Amino acid sequence: MRRLEPHSREWYARQAWERGGYFHPWKRTLDGPEPESTFNSLLESLIGPTARVLEAGCGHGPDAARYAAQVARWTAYDRQPELLELARRNAPEAHLALWDGRGSIPAALAGPFDLIVSRRGPTSIVPHLAVLAAEGARFLYVGPGLDVPQIGRRLNDVGWVVLGEWRERARAWLPTEADYRLRCEFMNMTPDPDLWQREASGRGLPYFEERHTLLAAAE
Image 1 (cartoon, rainbow, N blue to C red):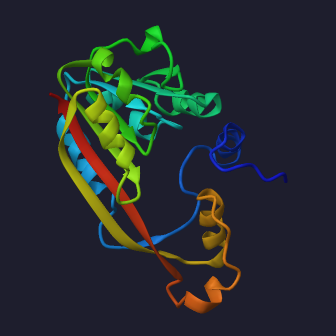
Image 2: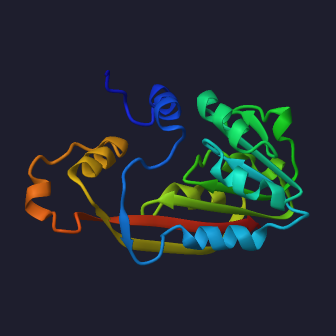
């Protein structure tokens, strides 16, 4: 099978066809809480039956499927048509549109929205916040790594202020060498052919799952 550049459009299409969605394909166990738990708690505290929510980069629709029935309107977009088709099946109560976050906002995504969220999704939504956000709206983001520096800069550029930031790190274990190679492929890293032999234990190979969660509002 031809190797595809990770996170290219062809690669996302293959994820949809072969894996049924966009998610980490490797198995893992964690020492401690899931590092996206703060994002989850904040999201659940910010939604309610009157909330109008816009999700940037919905992938195959796991959040839309979970939360759409709990809010007044859950609207979401993704740039990948294959993933969006899965989202339509997984989250029939959500309103979905094909968009890459650039150029004109599709009519299907017309606001205003009380909450704009992005779970490891694009930051290209930030320049559009002034048009999309309702008065008093919030923007909630979680990204891979302990710091996603561009997100704060982009928010400052459009006059939004960061209300809070959380950086979380959990030791994780890859139970098999195959899981290690899957993670390397997903992260576009070259596997170290000797790493498993050097560092794996009975629990597997250790690494860290890291997340940067940010909550912002208009000044």
